[in-house]
Length: 88
Image (cartoon, rainbow, N blue to C red; front, side, top):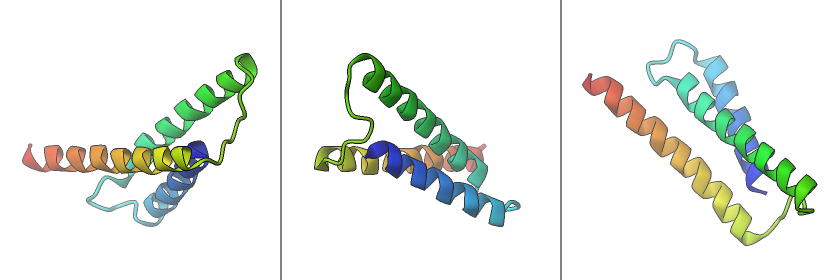
């Protein structure tokens, strides 16, 4: 489930970036962080389902909390990047 949450956040951030390309908020960085997280989690889930026989999508409360935590940490990294570039 966290992979789907990351995928939705990646798609939304990409759409917002396309609509506001000349923004001063470096939305391309947010989209890049989220897409990298999405690809990483999809590779991890694919490996686990092929090698270890796990389900690709598990809809449990723990996975939903993990997805929200991953999106929040991606936004936190993006905000740290924005503060760092403003200070410099």
